Length: 231
Ligand SMILES: [Zn+2]
Image (cartoon, rainbow, N blue to C red; front, top):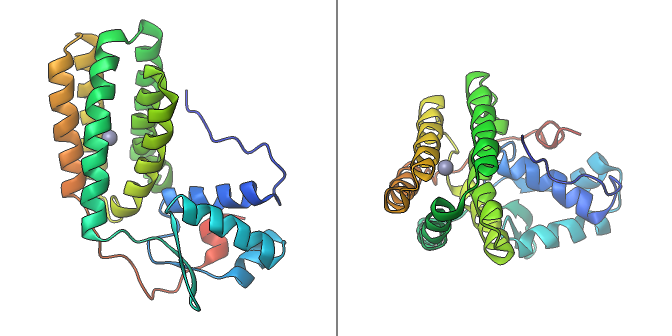
């Protein structure tokens, strides 16, 4: 069972435009450093520059977009320090979450997490990089949702999105499948109610993801915005 983000608002609303760009960023169809031209985006979505700008401002508040005076908008590109701090914060939050999850996870929650794991594996096997990147991140947010703390869930969702800008940029199918294997081990530890083991596994997992950081970005590469946003 994969929870898709709500796309219920009209396609021309600010939030709908922000959501389309956000998805493209999180799935790495738009790489860190990619230029987000207001005119080009306005044409793609068939809306005014003002509306595009509002969407970009919203994404800038989420730290997914960087607005540079006189230069315009770019997909944010975390530097090494920011990436370290993102993972540092994730570790603090996710240790608590996995510990609580191990203590209280229901059978239904574990089964729904296993279904998510299946989706991850299918995306990896199919070579669907965009879906794979999104699902690997959503696994972590799903645990937060299941623990049931909305504030931590919202914080983690933002942290996962932002750290996806710093990771997986050139993630190989092999490291993606390692990540998914580690998700499976986490589920097993929770199933055994092994809170200490689950916290250790989460620490190791986040360390592996962080170690694969590639902050090189793809500056200057020509990018087909329309294709990236899939309009
Ligand atoms: Zn993970």
